[in-house]
Image (cartoon, rainbow, N blue to C red; front, side):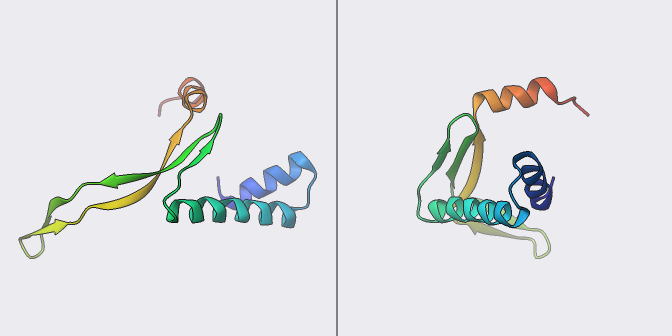
Length: 96
């Protein structure tokens, strides 16, 4: 499902113009991104949390040059679904 599919679905279900729904979806994504870039987590009860995970420093390999490189510690954005969300997917989506 793409952003366009989400906008279309919300517009059909709510009766709101697609342009207004698109602006709302864009604003939501921008707010989540801005909060994470400031170091804040975003909690949406019943849906999940957008969180920042810290990756420790590690040693990697550059196989084309056959050398080792140090990958510094860094933060990455992550999504942790709510328990009800996870259970819904687990119980309703068939394993391929």
